[in-house]
Length: 367
Image (cartoon, rainbow, N blue to C red; front, side):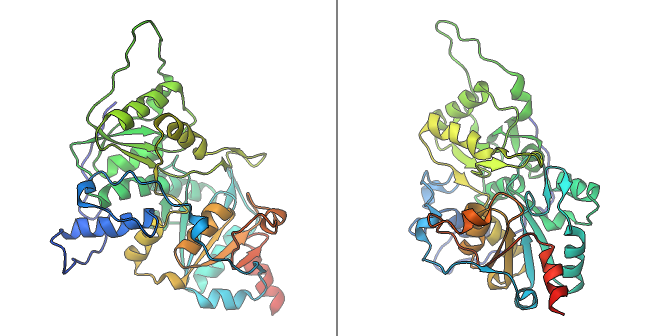
């Protein structure tokens, strides 16, 4: 099913300063600056890839990180709170697990707001749009505005805007409703998504699967309707459509669909397309700093005044470190203390604690 809709002038407005050396228009200059956050330091965006981006493999972020001192257990809460103006929170494993709110979250958020701190919720989960996430926060009894929510579904649409992706091109989606809604809000034509989950391929002698040659981007996110039809369709678009971009919302190995166990994450879907295309994706979610750069521009935030709070070392904490922020690991999600302190782990946050409500309990204990 093909959908498109207009987008308001205010959507995805990103401040841009024109280069004195380049004749590129402001929108393209902004796109190049934001796009650079997706690439290793040595990479650059050539003019030949203005719309479709280079087919460069993303750098292994951890290999560029300098050795860090071992993480400190959080003790001086006031010092941390006073040192930053914005807290970025991951959601799964930090705010909730599945559909269950983690103990102490409402009081912690209220305390930080009372101190004038800006709160932003940054999630790699692409199954919902920002509006849909707003409803989930509301259902859990949390007052959070749409402007405070940045999901990787939104980041995918934001990235396409930042590179001036042509509106006459289409996007094939391997993912769920959140990606479709954000693409629709951005005014992009799309096909795929949950609707293709029921489609099957009947392999007969001489059968050739057709695909839309006007697809200029394939976006892959977490997809509970993942099947062989989608793998083949996305593969054909990426391999046979000239300049087709391969975008991943994230490469998370696991996710929290329920609070009972971990479930295979979006990285498993992305990995299948990597295998069939022999291409690496452009990752717009954490640990890529695309969302960090977007937030810094949108709110006018100094990255040194941000604290990233998350439960994953290789996404949340690396995301904060890549962006030059303070980092706080909570042990309420994927990462255990044993994993953090393992000799094989090279990613060390500035601080760690059991859960975000420790910001309140430790503060009270210090009085």
